Image 1 (tube, rainbow, N blue to C red):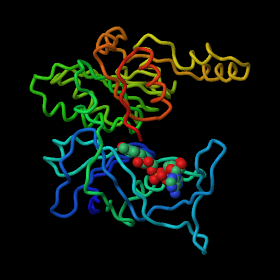
Image 2: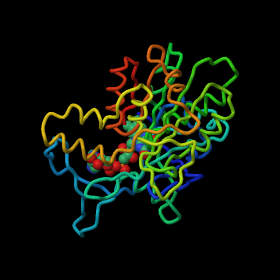
Image 3: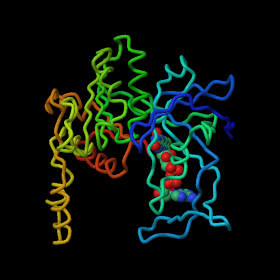
Length: 326
Ligand SMILES: Cc1cc2nc3c(=O)[nH]c(=O)nc-3n(C[C@H](O)[C@H](O)[C@H](O)COP(=O)(O)OP(=O)(O)OC[C@H]3O[C@@H](n4cnc5c(N)ncnc54)[C@H](O)[C@@H]3O)c2cc1C
């Protein structure tokens, strides 16, 4: 059993009201265990608002509701969850901290998620201590998942970009010209502000220290907000379909609809669809050439629905598929 230790948040940035980046320093004079880019660690706070299981819903999944004490206050206690490390091992060796990218979850009954709410609430009154388990785990690493390939296509949605940020920063740090692989990152979030790390990722691409193409897109563009031309549009699964010359998931659903109900649902989805658009400086043919199915691996992390569609695309195009399961 890994030892429990108490770390301190040394830097915290609220990127948007629902997205936060923070750095955690280890307990006292200790150091975090040595880790590989792509791994995760378990974090815990003791001031989480607790919930209790109420049964099983119609979808077969457990249902929960807030748990109250006899005085009608929501019970408070510990919750532990895993979080991917967004810092590179080289950062941690140099600076000591680990970095995380955390989203405020939609929890039960419209309430926020238990641990993410407590992490977002850290401050002067609540303290900035985060308990961590002194063991870094996981096999979502380039060594384990991307052996014997010429090209790595990474797809990260939302906070699912975290392991890829760690990998790309580490590749940048270690680059000495000997790595001949091509790395491509499709990185999608709803808005430009939520594309956390895009500044750093553009810099890594521009430095040219290894073969890296960064392909950020947003899935909820607004006509009122101008988009940086280096950022494309569309959901990650549809962007990857576009790269591999497939119709969008919504178009496929319309084509295969068998009943009036599913046809109407598909048409509604199509009416709302944000079609994939590449960043202005990238041509889809160039990207397609970089990620030839026979020599590439598709590494994915993020939104489960998007990941399921990416898995289907990988099967259709016969590309090796690897998923970090959250
Ligand atoms: C390997 C790994 C890496 C991850 N990396 C990240 C990351 O980098 N960034 C990030 O933001 N997230 C990451 N996650 C997700 C993270 O671990 C948490 O699941 C997420 O932050 C939600 O936690 P929460 O306590 O806020 O939500 P919860 O309160 O746990 O609510 C989430 C869901 O859990 C269920 N639930 C509610 N109450 C209970 C209960 N009492 N018991 C059991 N289930 C309940 C409900 O279905 C609810 O919708 C990762 C997960 C894994 C497995």
